[in-house]
Image 1 (cartoon, rainbow, N blue to C red):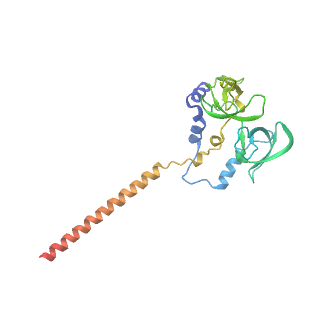
Image 2: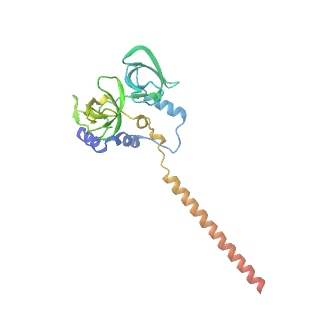
Image 3: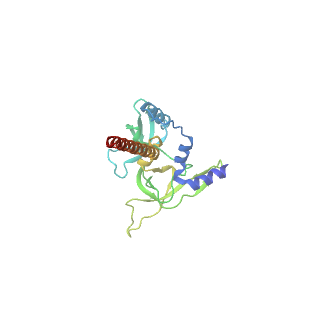
Amino acid sequence: ECIGGFLERLEKGHMLQTDYARKTAFFDGREYTQAQRKRRRSKMAARQGEQVAAKVTRTDENGSWILASVQRFYPDTETYDVQDEDDTSKLIRLPWSHVMRLSTGTEGCFQKDTDCMAIFPETTSFYRSKVSKSPVWKLDRSGNPMVKEIIVKFEDDEDGQGRTPHRRVPSRYVIPIPQDYFYDEIDDVDLNAANANNNNANNNNNANNNTSAINNNNSTNIANSSNTK
């Protein structure tokens, strides 16, 4: 079973989480209410004392996400109180969309050439980067497959010769780009079926209109024949 799970991660890579969500999700054709979305986010919220990535600026500039620890989550307002790991003297209040939970190394979300953000060596800030080599899976002490580190190339990290070095980052400190992390499966609606139904409806309407036109023409022809007689 362990080997099977390991091979599945290798085959599916970054699609593993999406496939798992689709296999286990229940969808009855109705859109989630705001209350249901709120309960879902609260259930998945980071816990007190947990290290997270937190966006502490209003802009999307490189390095705007930092390493922080959660002090409290407020379900009613869906906000966090976090502390900067470099400065624990103050609390920062952030919305849920400015906080990402960190990897455990077992998800297998990052394949070569995947865009991501990672903590730059000897800092506590996340910078835009790209996975430059395929991650290597190893067994942890419990025998579970995991990725301990990911090799990336950081954006704007060229040396004097214009070459961008490969840098090793613990997998825990490599996170998806925000639009991938906050992508919600419940908003992924397949419109093909709806389009097909609309096409069928249009075809049926066209067929009915053609039938009506034929009947009208037949009636007109019969009436003309009677008048002629």
